[in-house]
Length: 327
Length: 128
Image 1 (tube, rainbow over the protein chains, first blue to last red):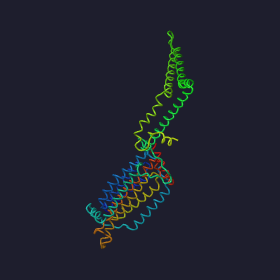
Image 2 (cartoon, rainbow over the protein chains, first blue to last red):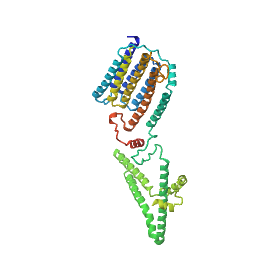
Image 3 (cartoon, one colour):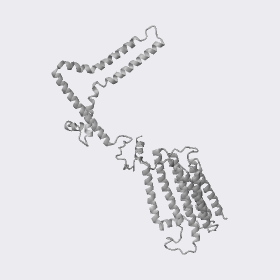
Image 4 (cartoon, one colour):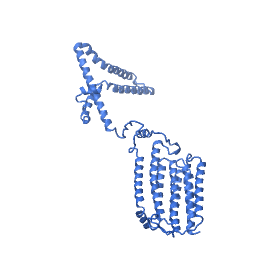
């Protein structure tokens, strides 16, 4: 029993004990930190066995990078702080298989090596490892670096949803997903085309109706002329009457000189509120038959002509092409 | 130095890794158990490196077996395995995080292996 044996026993006990805590702890974060302890103990074993560079690479890569990555994943998957209930399957089959594997390997190795004394090799230096890597093992080293690059690219492609998503061959046509900022240029162009088409159709209809009206006016002058102005303002008149009613009721219900009561104040407030509401409604509804919205569309279409007309034919001529597309 | 000690430690670590892979349901804990197993293999490689070289002192080195006069390839293999483990953890965590982004779960029991609606899920996730 030498110093090396005692060190290896202690470090091995630490490694196995914290490894057992890694696989049995109910706290996700704690098992990550026990993994740090276990890997550190294994790095100590490497040091005792004379593989110095491997030990430091173990600490750098495993403890420094891999465990931090695992803890980041624990954080990103919103793992609960504290014990989690549903972390484990039933223990019996796993314990059976794991115990069987451990027992078999231990028996095999103990039987192979017995209690034989080996001479501890001189500690390996970085120079020797470098000679070997870049002498005898150059080809595996380069292949491994390519594999690491491929894994890097694969991880990036996997974790970004906007690249590398192949369309499912069974799914057929995949719908175009609108971006978070705006529509794709094709969709924008299509919407512009549709708007221009509608505007053209509206102007055509209006022109047609005006021609009809002019023809009717020419035929029977007075009747249509009376009707057409009256049909538009009837709604406005109705609303005006309503507003009139409301205003005069409010006027009648206004507080008189002698009686400024709380109830009266309340009634007044109510009435005034109602009046405001009705007026607003009229403003909304009255805007629709009134002039400015109808003519706005053709001007819009006119504005959009030069912008949308770069790629494809557009409603400048309007008659032959428009007919074909509209119907 | 008794070579049995690191070997038995490695065997026990590997058994713990197997137990963890079979027992745990959380994908990240399964990855941790896989790390334990890879470390056990590394430990075996390094221990074999030091012990078998000591056992081979009188054997004539042959050109096909040892490309360099001093055979110490175990540490090199351990380095290679460490690099492989880093690559494995990177890709595995990317998969786990992508799955979590799609399904809000990291439980391996409930991974549906026979569904092909990943594109729809992705689209729904993009639009939402």
